[in-house]
Length: 419
Image 1 (cartoon, rainbow, N blue to C red):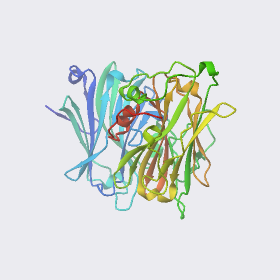
Image 2: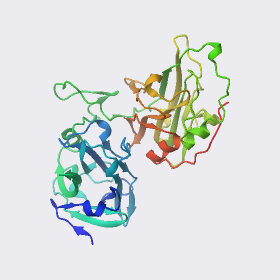
Image 3: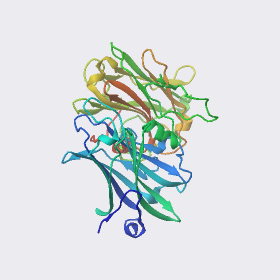
Image 4: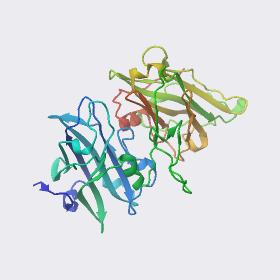
């Protein structure tokens, strides 16, 4: 039987979780938003006992859909009977012991034809199911004010027991103020200048890196947007040079094998998943010769495949994005792959730089100290009503298929060769 809770009500989940090994699903549902022009963005925050995030990556949204420890994942929303539903998959057994609370929220991003405040929604509901059986539900009254952010519910741990609580608390200052209360400083259009956040007050001793920046589209378009990937290439003597060719290695990558090459050579590939405005999706990568096209779909092109370092022992690859065709692009996920060499990003000294004309470059270090993770996401570029939102996304994966699943691109992957 489903327990129905009012605002402020809570329910212990211990008995329901006994058979599921800590796995459950939470659903946010709301009505009154325009399916054609949605203005509501669901978000979640992973919080410590002090009510603070550990880092910016503890804020999950459609742009950042999965937590680093895979304890929480964000699934794309869908429409049913003119109501929008958003699901979160939760595995409490994987959650960092330092985390004691997960906050689920809705935020407004005003768009033409969409609602302008939480109060304009006709309803907001939240439900939790365990093994496809609904155990608790709460139907919340939306505020009549102009609140632009809304804490819907929380799952929290108290005295070793996990509980659900219906919150229903609004924030007039919106997502930025809400995120700030959890320890995250967001860069908005007024503050963001080429990846630099202008503080509203004196900076703290440890400023927070903004999870994303948004760039207004110039009248003439964004122009030639470039992504540069550089990394260190260890020098090897002729005696140390590999004898095996670089063919068929992706078969190990896609299946999740290490595919390690027993020599010092290191080759990184700059790659990108893309989704166009018409819904078509694909990949740009050196493997298989899928270098893309600059002036035709998909409007991004990989400029060759660098396998040798320069005199200083550094290699560079460049991805060009036709910013003047930005209206035909929905999103681009840029990532790097260690195609050859021991998969350790800290030793690769990788660095990506995103260069948008007339903006300060956005630098991203690929310095994860992990082993056997050949793929590292770099950034997600989103078309937000003509603007370009750049989200830093430094997360490692065993292979491209795992990256695809995390960001829900739904491509078909198979083994390939690189001549």
